[in-house]
Amino acid sequence: MSVLPEIPAYAPPEEILKAGFAAAGGNIALACSFSVEDVVIIDMAKALELPLRVFALDTGRLHEETYEVADALTERYRTKIDWYYPRHEAVEQLLREKGTFSFRESLENRHECCHIRKVEPLGRALKGLDGWITGLRREQSMTRTGLAPIETDTTNGGIIKVNPLLEWTEEQVWSYAKFRRIPTNRLHSQGYPSIGCAPCTRPVAPGEHPRAGRWWWENPEHKECGLHRR
Image 1 (cartoon, helix red, strand yellow):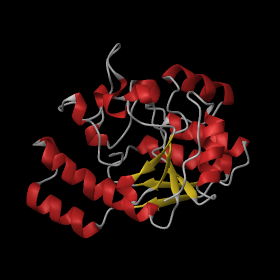
Image 2 (cartoon, helix red, strand yellow):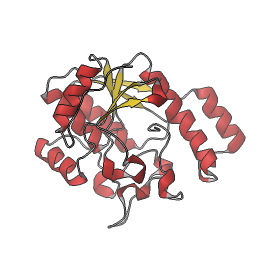
Image 3 (cartoon, helix red, strand yellow):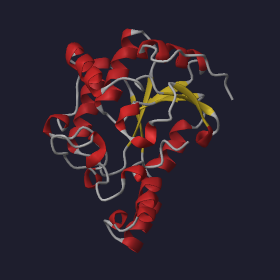
């Protein structure tokens, strides 16, 4: 288990990124869902000349627009994206036994689907790493208020977890993105502040919480897929 660096409250994201890289000895990667936050982190890392590795989880149910962003990032930053996929046997068994939309029937079923399509592939993606980077922000959800900029991920073997944008607001993220003219998912401009699997994501109405469009049939305290358990 690595020793966590001391990061002052509200440290700049760039400082958090560099400290996270150093703490992990460079053996660290970004878990990229192609949200605006993740693209901002890629741009920051490139500007800092950090050797950022990027991986993504293809659940089999992503939006077409998400793949478009992936291609745009590869072209602009010449960044290789390592894709991880769910075990096809597990997906086939789930669909045969419970149908296409079992995840809407109960929280247990939804967690089962997320485990097969996201959590298990994440475990493979993190294997051998000393740390990983996320685009989590504190204001996104009530489930993320207790996070730290750099923390120990006890769920994934005690590796380092780096959340460089933790204290940034949505306005700050978009201000950076627009100033740097970075590629972003066009669903964001269509009312999708948070984008996941297509069947589990919908646009939000003006004034709604940004995470209201994710698993909208569930209570707010349940709106995580299992990737970011503490």
